[in-house]
Image (cartoon, helix red, strand yellow):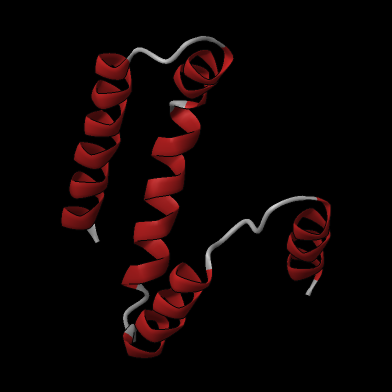
Length: 87
């Protein structure tokens, strides 16, 4: 309940944390996930995202180099693919 309150407060102060489409997919997938794979996958993806926060902040602070952004997205996608294999 507390986490939901935090999310609601953050959303009141700015744009939504999650899109409606993401939330709908999350609910649909969660109803089918009996082994907990979705939670483990999302945890691993969040770990990869947090590990790359410095790179993300650097790109947001200055003019984004398209090639650098593409490299970061490739790194994140590769990490997500690895996470999917371990789930």
